[in-house]
Amino acid sequence: MSGSPVSNSLKRRKTRRRYEIEHHARFLTFSCFHRLPLFKNDLIKARFVRRLAQTRQVRGFLLHAWVIMPEHAHLLLTLRLSGPGMAPVLSGLKRTFASEVLSRWRAINAPILKKLNDSRGLSHFWQVGGGYDRNIFTSDEYFEKIRYIHHNPVERRLVERPTEWAWSSERAYLGGGEPLIPIDHAHGARCGAMFTAAPPKRRGTAVAPHVTLHPSFRVFSNLPPLPPG
Image (cartoon, rainbow, N blue to C red; front, side, top):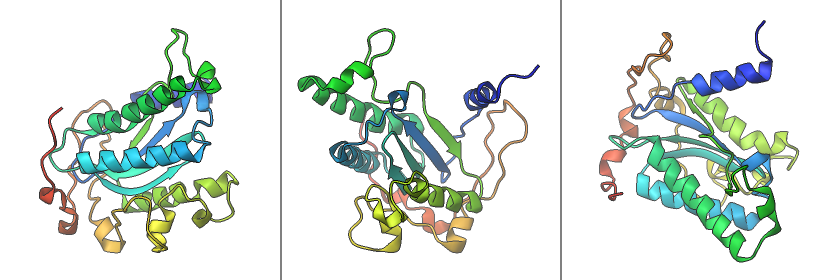
């Protein structure tokens, strides 16, 4: 007998391979601990936006879309050429942000801290685990993820229109005012050139497909080198 849909989904998530491919877009989801609405306070959202902008400046990735929801966040980004991969990006973003927020909450003895301890008594802002990380292999999927990100607040009935939610990149795409974070746009054929390969069909292989990028996307060569550490 096969397992339940939930257990099968978890197994697929645990066994999914992530490929470190230059010029390759990744769709990321970070959930708060126990799906608690830890982003409910706009000051916490603003702090995450600031940390996202700082991490992007240091690590030099392209940021295509983002949204902060009450209990999770979505990002669509592309890593820099010859960079160290996703791990230091996530560490600089998630771990540093969590440390800042938890330290502040401890300083003021915030009641929410009682809900953030695991069985060992350790406090967490993020759900334990690496979160959701998906390689994007087609331009159709790329634009579908942007739409999904921007319409997430509407689907959750937080607002009626995507532009009404201040904590996303939707307004940057419409050109209405100064965006909270500048966005690296990809339009039409320029985006289509990002994707020239399908994911590997053979399970367990660590060989990533060859992906080429339109020359207009080779902007990382002009960035300063990464700082040590």
